Image 1 (tube, rainbow, N blue to C red):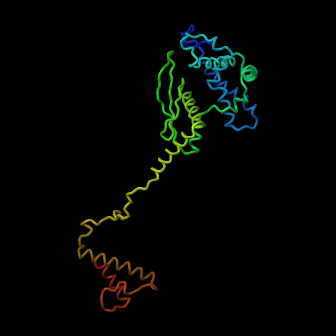
Image 2 (image 1 turned 45 degrees about the horizontal axis):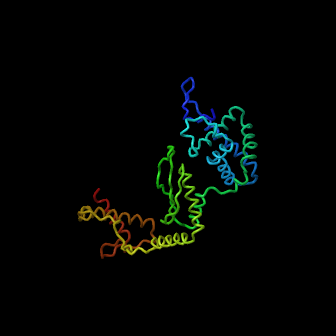
Length: 307
C-alpha cells in the first residue's frame, strides 16, 4: 500500500479508496520525530534554530525525492502513469508512506534503524547537509533588512506544463528595480530559485547594487522632504460653553434678594468659623459703619424674612 498512488483508484471491499495517502501522513510525522531524534544526538550542544534548520533540510520534499530515486522507490510506485513525473513529488511522498508502513509493521525502533543505517550512513552526509545553506530566500530577506532596502516577491505567472502539473513564476523587485525570475513546480521552489539567482547577480554585478542604493536614496530623500503647510497655532476656545439666552436674562428682584440672603448667610457662617481672617469690607453693602453684631442680625433677618 505504501507504493500505491491514488491515481490507481483502487477500492477495498467496503468501497473505501486504497492508496498511500494515509501512510504518507503518518510517515511525515514519524520522519520528523526520528530525524529530530538523530539530529539532536548527533549535534550535541547546538541550539534549537540550528537543529530545526538541519531537520528541515533532511525531510524536505527535494531531499526525499532524491532519496526515492537513489533507492529505486520511484520505479516501484503503482500509478496511472501520467502523474508520475519528476515534478509532482510522487517519489518523496512514497518514501514518507514507506516510513509510515515500517512504523506500523515494526515500530519506532525499526524506523530509527532504517534511517540511521540505510539512509544517513549510506546516502546522506548529515554534516554536509547541516552546514550547507539552501534557504536563499531567507538569506536575501536578511540582506535586505540589514541594508534597509525594500524587497518584494511578486507572482508573474501561474500555469500548467505538458503533464498537467502546476508551475509558478516569481519575480523579485528590490527598491522598485527588477531582480531575477524563478520558475518552479511550487511557490516555494520558484521563490527559492529567484532568490538564488538574485543573490548571484548581487555578487557578480556591483552596478546592480549601486542602482539599488541610488533608488533607496531617492526614496528616503522624498520621505524626508519637509511639509510646506505649517500648522496653525491659534488656540480655539470651543471648549467654553456659551450661556443660553435664558441664563443671560436678568434675574427678578425677588430672586436676587433671596440669593443675596443666602450668600450673606454663608458669609456669616464662615465668620463664626474663621473669625481671625474675617474682613468687614467683604460684606459691607452700606456706607454707614455697623458693628459686628448689627451685621449678623441684619443678615439673619434678611435670610429668614420670607419664612
